[in-house]
Structure formats: C-alpha cells, structure tokens
Image 1 (cartoon, one colour):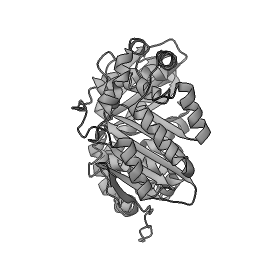
Image 2: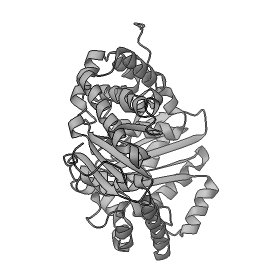
Image 3: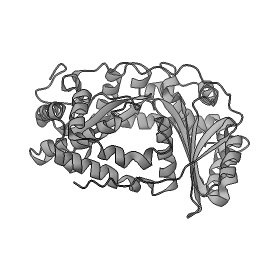
Amino acid sequence: MSDTIPSGFTLPVQVVEAAGVTAWLAEDHAVPIISLAFSVPGGAALDPEGREGAAALAAALLTEGAGDLTANAFQEAIRDAAISFSFSADRDEFTGGFRCLTDALPEAVRLARLALSAPRMDAQDVERVRARAIAGARQALENPRGQAGRAFWAAALPGPYGRPSGGTAESLANLPVELLKSMPTRQFHRAGLMVTASGAITAEQLREALETLFGDWPAGDPGAVPALPAFSARGVQVVTMDSPQSSAVFGQPGLAVDDPDWEAAGVVLRVLSGGGFSSRLMNAVRVERGLAYGIGAGAEPIAGRSVIVGSVATENARMAETLSVLRAEWARMAASGPTEAEREEAIAYLTGSQPLSFTSTRQVAGILLALRQNNRPLDWLEKRPARLAALSRDRLAKVAARLLRPDDLAVTVAGMPEGLKTGSF
C-alpha cells in the first residue's frame, strides 16, 4: 500500500450569521441553482402519545396553502417559479428546505416564510392529506417488511422514538385539526436550529433569507426533547403473517455520533454489511448459500446516538438458516475484525467515492446539514482521508470487538418462518 495519503475533498464553506442563526454556506455560481436546508430538534418525538403522526401530517400540510394563498394558489406559485419544497418530521427532528433557480430566490423565501409561519390547514385540505397518509400507513403494513419494521422499532426503543414517525392509520384518523395547527408553535424555535445553503447564493443574500425565514422564531427551545432510551430488544421476535416469504429487520445499539470510534465503526460496518457484494454478509448469505437476494445494515443516527439496523427477506423455509449465518458473521467480525485486504478496500472506497456525494446543490446542503448535526468541524471533509488512512487493522479489530454484540443482536421476523419462534437464537 502506498504511503501517500490522498488529499481530502475540499469544499470551501463560509459561516454566515443573522437573526441569531448560524448557517454554513457553500457558494458556487457555476450553475444558477440554490438549495437551502434546515433542521430543528423535535420532530415525531414531540408528538403526544396516541397522536403519532401529528408532526409528519402537519409538515405535509405546510405547502397546502399559506397566508392568503389557498392550496391551489400556493401550488401554482411553486410551479410558476419552478421551486421545490421539502418539509418532514423524522424521529428526532423537523427538517425542511427548498431548491430554486437564482432568479426565484425572493419568491422561494417569501413562500417558505408563509408556509412556516402561516399555514392555512383548511378543513378540506387537511382531510385530503390525512386520507393519503392513512392509506400510506395501511399500505406499509400489507407486507412483511412493514410489519417487521414497526415491531422491531417498538421493541428496540420503547416510547416516542420507537413509534411510527408517520403515524398509524388509527392515530392519523383521530388527530385534531387544532393539534396540527399548533405544530409551528411546538416545533419552531431557534434553539438548536441549523441551516445550510449551497449554490449560486451570496453570503448577503443568505443573511437576508435567514432574517426573513427565522427572524420571528422564538429564541428558546420547544422544551425537553425526550432522551433516547436504552436499546431493549434482544433475540428473535416473530410476527405471524400469511406470506410465502418472511422479512427480518435486525439490529443492535450503535455508537454516539461524537464517539472517537465513529469513523472506524463505519469502516467495520462497510466490510461486514454495507459494501454490497463485497460485504461479508452478502457473500455468506447470497453468494455462498443463495439464501436471499440481498442483505445489508448500517448505522442510523437518532438523538445523538445510533442504532445499527439492517434487513433481509427470504422464503419462510430459509429464514432460520439465514439468521444463523447472520449471527455467525456478526460474531466472526466481533472476534477478529476485518482482514488487511478488507481494510484497504473499504478505506479506498470510502475515500474515493466521497466526491460523488457532492454532485448537486441539494446533496451539498444536505451533507453540510448532517455534518452540523453531528457536530463536525469545518475541515472534517478535508481531513477525512488522512483519518481513514490512519486506521490500522488492529485498531479496527478493537473497534469491532467493542461495537458488535452478537449475543445482543435483536431480530424481528414477519411472515411464517419455519423453525423460528419468539425467543433467543
């Protein structure tokens, strides 16, 4: 292996401040497109018990009319200016943003301000969007994957973070309109607000946008966001469902996003479960045994920590063997870590593929937002190749032993799996 450390991907980022808000800006006028993204802590975690889906449904309604614009008028304004809006409530945060042409920036900011500060939520629009959300919630449970996912998260993270962030058909049907209309008051506070922007926008234009969009938000926070509970699932949980195939969702606790071993853990997971056909799980489950079409897993950050979660689907008669192979590979990686060849391949991929993540203003704004959410410094990307190159096989083996817990691996299977029942495996 060469001793030369590859240079990092450079992305000049400016820090822009206005209205008590700090934003990161990657200014680039090569293409006349602008993307802005923001997040604030809360999201579905702030939904009252039994009112799951309130934040998600309210987010979907933000572009269904605002201020003096009806839903049709708002959508026409978006189409006329070629603006794309995105608002969503995830497990632990509310996120939003827009993409537009440079000339449409004033209109994008105007409409975004209306959506965030004065959503109409007219009765007919609420019921139309509610019906769509209910249909989606029901459809998600029509297959084993949806059933397994819901049961896995409910068992793994009891409480707000384990509930369906989009709600259930029952909870969505019973959401009062008044609760939906109160969402901006509950969610939108400047404490914890993070903003990023990318593309053909200057620092001064971004300052003006920050003032307009967030200047009126309260300076405080919406109250205590629930702490992430201990990961409490273990062993196998079977959800019986009449289907020729079974689907499994599996996982275990991960590391905190600011853990010193976070990047090393990413390399370990790349080798074990995230490298497509180069991963150990794919090789053992599909290539060598033909048990399933695909299998994979990765770390999902939640409330400053993470859960390692993955999935696999196969015939009912083959699920037990598939899970046995899964647990064996999990244990093998925990016992010895990756080989030197696997280490080199994973680091080469993670280093070489990094620039491919920055091919659009939307991607750049999203990645910058993720860096801020994970409390990364401005030079994180530039120094990443050197940090990865410094990870020795011995270091990765120690991290694998610390990270992976085969005895604590939790699996939820939905279907009619032969030879499996709820309990240990």
